[in-house]
Image 1 (cartoon, rainbow, N blue to C red):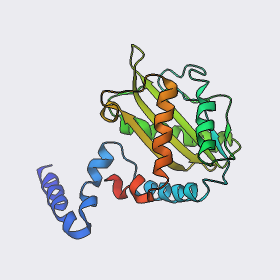
Image 2: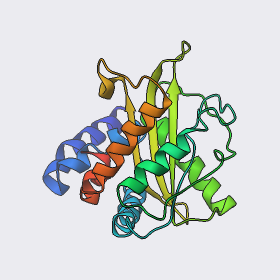
Image 3: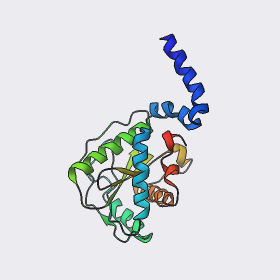
Image 4: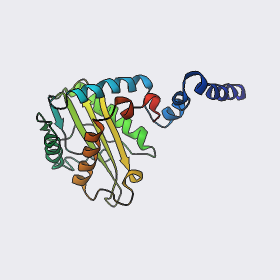
Length: 212
């Protein structure tokens, strides 16, 4: 065991010289829940397709969901707000879905990054199975405390094949002293971040080896 540990440490020390600094952090990023570099490459390709089709693609906005409790249509009015926000920025082919996907809830746990990507994979499987109409699908999930305060937001865009084209999580570290006051404000925030992201290169949104 000590020999294996010594070899691992030596490899970690040599990796920045051999293949660049990002790769040395790759095992740590994976341990914290970042997807594999192979999946990230697919995400970058899907993100570029999303950017290229932003004014012509058919995108479907779903009501914000409570991924832990999965209360039925907990935030049903948010789909209209999301769709209106997208249309105002040029997504003229945007439509809204009547309800959230029928997927199982998942306990939050202590690692939001890992949790968010597990949710992305769950939504990916739903898209592949349900095959809903549309070129892209926008999902927003809102995490709440026991007292009802918003403590986190997760946003995803998946293409029609179920590939993740966009993923973003936010929590108290991003909110500072001004967390979203209600689900509508949470949706506006994550939508604004998403729209701004479309002007960024794919490597900025999905950094190589999950480090960036």
